[in-house]
Image (cartoon, rainbow, N blue to C red; front, side, top):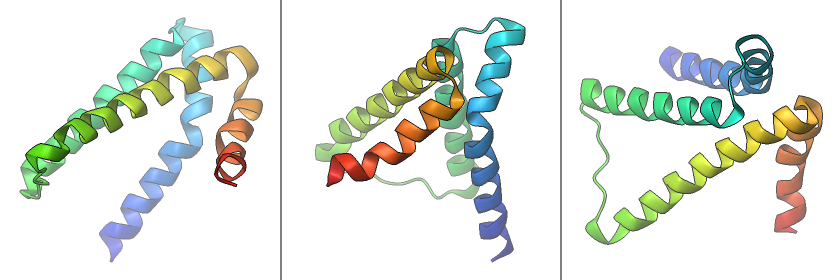
Length: 108
C-alpha cells in the first residue's frame, strides 16, 4: 500500500513540475524543447526497463500487438516534443490548459 502511494506521489510531482522544469532548462541552460522531450522520453524508458528487470515483472507483448506498442510509444514521444515546444512558445499556463482541457472537448 505504501509503495503504491509513494509511486502516485512521485508521478504527481513529476507531472506537476514538468512545464516549470522545462522552462528553467530552456532559460538557464539553453536546452532546446525537443531535447528536453527526448531526454524525458529516454529517461522514462530506461527507468521502466530497469524496473522491469529488477522486479522481474516484464510485460509479455503478443507478436501481433508489437506494432501497436511501437506506434503508441511514437505517439508519446511526439506528444512530448509538441508539449515542450508549446511551453517554449506560449508559456506553461496556456499549454497546460490546452493539453489538459482539450481532451474532454475532443472526445465530446
